[in-house]
Image 1 (spheres, rainbow, N blue to C red):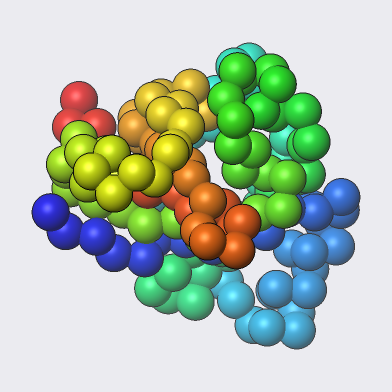
Image 2 (tube, helix red, strand yellow; image 1 turned 90 degrees about the vertical axis):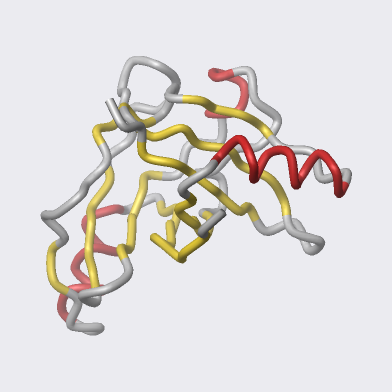
Length: 136
């Protein structure tokens, strides 16, 4: 099972201000390749800006404290933001978490079309995403 850093998500009350900062101050380019197709009617309808350093994506998402309630999941990925990894075998990764006793929320394809996502907490309460791109 392969696991690579894919993106960092920052949750904000002002997407345009964050986008401007990461563009003008940090010099990051607009990301146009491999962007997720957001499922706006399934629990998260916030705005998201996408930047990149050429290797890692930065998702600058509108904070939404109610996503967990709307989707019925314990973990809210746009409360404080999260770090995301991409895997080539989400089922093997879930099995590994089960074996280690790490609880997770399996969002499936609820938030992003074509991405099977799970979210869980690290020991300090930071949200971690692992996702697999569907082959379909």
